[in-house]
Length: 293
Image 1 (tube, helix red, strand yellow):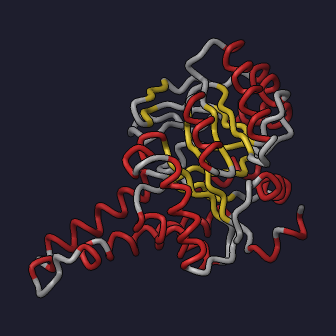
Image 2 (cartoon, rainbow, N blue to C red):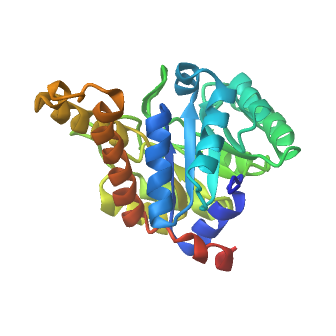
């Protein structure tokens, strides 16, 4: 079964100046849609759950088993990383115990020394089980499951300190935010990204990928971003397609109310969104990845 921790995939992506999509899932339809898109394009994918989504879906073990079972049932052959997004210390440990093969420990709201100490502990625990670790330096603006960040720029010194803990990927605040971007958003701080990329050898992560102009994403990828997080864009696509189905009265035609029919347009919209975004991220087909490791 093609479940991997993603460390080598993202190293190859940074070296090859492309990115791999990290897409949040919220239920069975979401997971199926993302896996189908990756299989259709023959590209690797990282499927992640936030703490809130995992709670909604029934817990980390449910999420892990759901993704793992669908990979098998759908005969998925591309590499799939099961990842915890923005997990606190206890959530990271729980996801590791549940069998996720990658976790993000987000301690940005802790004092730096405590954040570093807990990051080292998570790295030690995760690596003993072959699980990769993502950390965050600086805060990502916006809100993620009740965790609110003001968009603080990452310190280069802090980025180097977290790199030295042995993490596998590093998320850095460079002006990016979660959710929809306001009209007065000033854009990514490429000068800070350049400084961090020169100081940190690990693959870099861009959170809040939904809504950043394509040209800015492409520039960030060329500078070291290897993992691009997407959530809001899929949510908006799902909502739009579902709304159109209901407003057209299709749920009142025959058995159009059947959830398998009702959710089908939104599910397809997620797959289509995945394919579109993967295209402009330059994600390499699976057959090319081993050549670049």
